[in-house]
Length: 595
Image 1 (cartoon, helix red, strand yellow):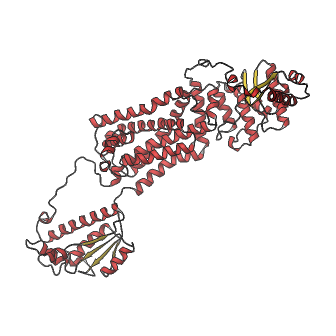
Image 2 (tube, rainbow, N blue to C red; image 1 turned 135 degrees about the horizontal axis):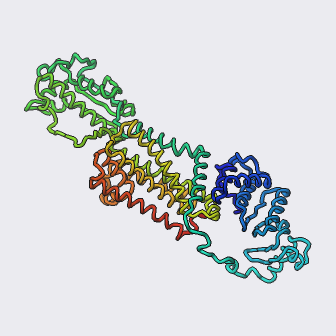
């Protein structure tokens, strides 16, 4: 029994006993019997209460009950009666005396000197030095004392006078030789089932944990699809039309501007086409009022048509044109350039609107639209239509979720057990590190499947991001492998982190880093050449490329680049997993709570 409580706060007292019963292989009937005995002995409260809701004394009694639960032949108890009232202390010591009479070996540390009077052998330690060891009566007799406390004080005085404290503490450290094979090293399915029961009970009891595990992926995926990467619509734009203040379709419908430029107003056609895709066009009476609104940041841009826009545009299309016609036939646009993406989007919308306007205008003149269109023809390959930025960014987003949710969950589970000292306790109970890791991976696999199903359903079936049905199972397999990468990465983070703060810094820092490197925020083609070469071999970047090839390019599994990426993804899984398998061998104190 350790000095700290080292119990799972979110388990009930009953679930705690059930867990350790399964861990020690006690059958169900004996578990019930043992629970009833310990409840009577230790006067435990309602077993349906969670450990975190018990008082300090109740927690210590429960911890003591766990130490007694499997009726061990040897017990090492670190201050078992701290925080208990005298009546309870007396009851516990009477019970320990009974156990010692049955032939059990009990080693107890305590600061209550007088309660050790019932022990067979008492050893007094001061400053790491054993100053006396014998039966209680012999110690009192040798020191000519009436109580053990007086005997201890007398020995302390002797230590001071004889300078015993100069002795090295190292002489007393290794009393019992460490036998490497004193416990069997084989994997135990019984202990694995006990750990699985404990993990499932913790998951069920911790409602906050449940929320963040299953609701957060849902919320993040929905918010991402609603907010990120869509075509920008309804950006506020101002319009100043000096050619015609009150536009109507009669001013351009079925009229050829080449034949009748004075009665045809292409500025009205342009504005109507732009208004069809942007309902936030604001008319201003003059250029001054429009510029004032732009400078006040009421609008993103200002579009200005000169008083003779259509006539000069007709002249501009002739072979011979002067600078006046060129200047007056230009749509003058002033933009707020503080947002680069908004600027690009507005420019693209206005350009496409001009093309559509000219296309309709030439149709009324019964001439080929190609005569006045851009001499550029763009064609797309593949069957997938990528019409928004979110389509090309979705592979990076789904990969980040698949990697970081398991990573954060693994880190949190292991650090909670490590920080509360539970890891040390269950390993003393015989649990092997491999059994613990496999139980975590088993729970994580179930959670990861549920999380990924939620994310994939929202991303690809609710919001209709592109995905090829033929590649779905390859896609799902890749997501699972990425999740296992995150699980093992989280275990490594927990192993090297001294506390939650350090682990949080690692998780958040790498999340931001990989968000930039996987092409989620901006295409990596724009990055520095050295960074691009390095980025090609990072796990998140490789996985994002695979998912993009499967969903956006519809490449099958046997495509060379898909196979290459899948092999590298498996290699990275081994890179994360192999150190976990050997970490406990070369750093044995990795899972011990730091003092």
